[in-house]
Length: 104
Length: 104
Image: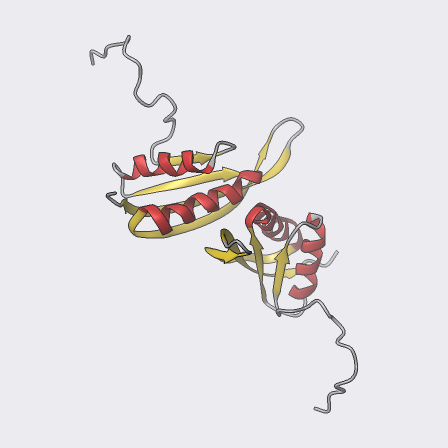
């Protein structure tokens, strides 16, 4: 396909579709990222590792309580990943949230 | 049964049965508390609020991966509570874990 290489990609950071990876940025930036993805998709997955897990739960709660209509937490999964060198175990969480952004 | 009302309760801190409330203590103290309760019960609930949520997930993962046979994460629930004055919202998590402590 003939893509215009010079134009900036609109979403340079969108690595995975319908996934919001929660890290150390302010809470609301993840809430907004999730809302944007939910305009195009019925559900998204909020993922986080280690200390960011509590923030991921905050993001899911803020989304469902304040910004989404007809929303629900579809599933919550926790697991362990081995990362880094030296390898160490770190917990991960995946929260699947569905709903439609409320019109403000 | 004839209970002696005046005798001190043996476990003064056990407010809720089969519940491990995760806070700021070292991770393994919660793992051990959970293991002790699991010798008497089929399943326990690991609860945490706010920042401690990621630690609660760690506790559940360490339990199921290292210390329990036949273990499973029965359910994971997240919710929001309003605490403090001035009131503020804080996320909570409840992880129900079942399994039998492995004999070492």
